[in-house]
Length: 328
Length: 272
Image (cartoon, rainbow over all chains, first blue to last red; front, side):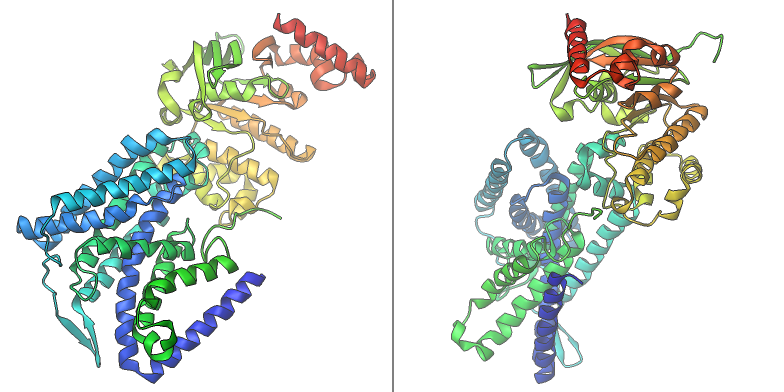
């Protein structure tokens, strides 16, 4: 066992111990927070997956992903609220729109930057994010604070624990979409093409794998998962996120989740997302009780970044990031 | 194919390649691969062998190179217009220099990636079995990450992956590079076996003995131009080839300084 593995195991055991203690101390509060954390984690996982597929295909950390999450939420909102469409149909429509936007970004903006310094490319993605954000401000001036949905304010009781129905929907939807992605990624020819392209683009081309098509597909997938994440966040009524530019702040917290999981690992995206989601909700619920010296609130927003730094110190490539396969 | 007129499967005609708009890498290269033949392409480092393969397979643009002049005809099609993906679909597969296997994927996945352009699942499955018979070592290690295999095994993965495309023409770039002599012999036998199955082969090699021993035709490239061509046997017997590529001629026993001077003279002579 390598040293970083041992340190990580030790950290994991300590964290698990804390969670078990909290669970026995007050099961109802714990599991309420835990359910909310898993739902939030599912959203993070979806946003992360969007980052990861594009990073793998092109080597770029795509900040436009954050804008796509918010924009996707507003497109769904527009279909549901303004046009009166069915909720699911609206989400499907938004997914199609964002897939097209993603492909468009790649085709007409990022492809022109091929071979330019990575820094310039990342700045361009930040520019695209700001473009989407200002479009939202211009188009939806008087938006409601939630995407209208059938579950607002309702909870479902599991034992003595009350869970928001929206959170349950988020968990199920997140699980289904992530599972679908993994089937595509692991067991289909296209998935093989995606994995091969991530390792060596030229060698992939030499096998007749169309790298431009794989890159376009990656952007489309990023668009689809952005819509689902954004719509779920936007459907969660206040005091949670709700519909608004605040979604961007949440989507940005997927960045530490991605770094924790490993930039290039879809499994890492899910694990990182869940870690950040659960720890965020735990901090919201327990920090003022156990560590009041850290202030009355706000620590929860810092925690994901602290965890990120901790993981980076122990294993710079993230929990599941590729430590290159090579013979020794 | 004795007696009959060989229809070439690949015709390279007067190809000139420029990198980054200024560096002239190929200056009018012409060669032919007859259908069903093994053709050897010899030359020192930097002679332009890999560049020529890139021009043929359509991977030139990835490297910022451009074919300025000439034509490449593969099985009657203009290969320069096909691009890398359609070239593979048309029946040309390439084993790149340095093997370039997908290290993080399993042997199995590497092989399957070679069949990416093919639709006929039955034929692919049959080829897969055939390739595992050709490389029994790979059958044993199907589920391991390809990056953990030995150099020789990795070369077999690279060749097997290319064969999964069911190519009419196989381009091999330095398959013997960095391998032990015993493994080089194995690779040579494999190339002969592949060729016997009906696949034409364009073999780029620095190991001229190996290449010429199995090639019907050979070309020698220097400074981006063909300086010699002939049958494999002719080239093996050629005094210059023996001196500069086989190390068995008179100069092979002369002092190193003498060899270098002769080489330089021959090289400058060939350019003008």
